[in-house]
Length: 398
Image 1 (cartoon, helix red, strand yellow):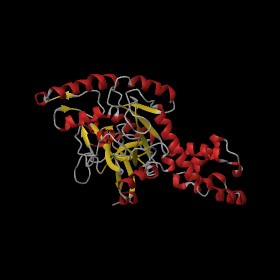
Image 2 (image 1 turned 180 degrees about the horizontal axis):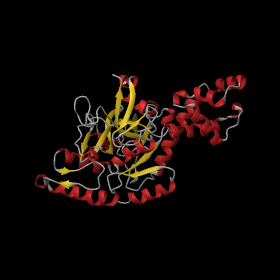
Image 3 (image 1 turned 90 degrees about the horizontal axis):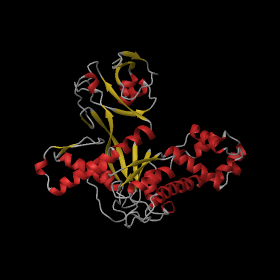
Image 4 (image 1 turned 180 degrees about the vertical axis):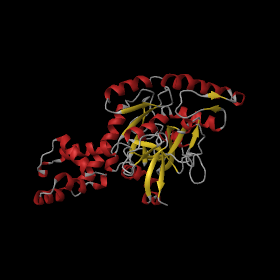
């Protein structure tokens, strides 16, 4: 799984990336700050199963704070886009091609309206952030259209002559866009496409491009800089204008400040929480105290969190519909080395017990006999579909 973090320059995209990963990315106020795409590791938040079993987990990957398990996911921070990226302006084609790898997108916008369409600073509320949403979706749609049109005329003539099953033929033609037969059939029905492919003109192909983009690149919009005066009014306007979109109020700067403070043991803070506790107040200067008080009242107090963790969780659990599951080797909730609940794996919804076994290890899948749900103590078969936060013991023949 790869989550792409996308947006124009200077909207706080690199700050958001850092807030998720605490990576040492370059943060500056000019276009193309991030020239080479940065990969990093963020973490989604899951209620750990250790509390239910009255044990303390020992994660191999990620970490756990107060029975909140943070499970790693890979993030891709792609350099800022500019209008016309799909036509190759700026460094657009390179970045869009990088995003082809992404399973879902997090679109960072400056909800305070302090960055124009070129990524240049303007007075607060001097630019309508709605344009950013329209701009990015247009660029992605045109990128998809360009890929669809490549070799389309010859393909259409072949289909017209040979008369294959249309959804299968088109899905095969567009396989580079992660299109399968089921998805293509769904799109054809939604758009009521003519059975004669020769009647599919450029407008029809653009509609197809839009539907495929929505399905294969689901998106959550992080409305960054929500703590700036006037930004909340913009946020409310966006929610009314883009009712079919997922929008989250967000302050990446606040999240970075809290994580850095926690890292230096100045505060106790669990990412995604609605509060924090100052633990070494004597080490804070007046400026730091004022900044933390601002975050407490103007961000956490008003919005319930900084929004950063919420955005990541939405991308994985709502957009991609993944679930978190715990594999264990024994009924004592340990692996073969005695570590308690060492792994928490992210798998697609409706993953079966056998598929889960293969996810853990090929040998475990090949030697699968049965699985045991450690919460209910019930034996489940290979076709049993797992649920979120299941703790599963896999029994093998070896």
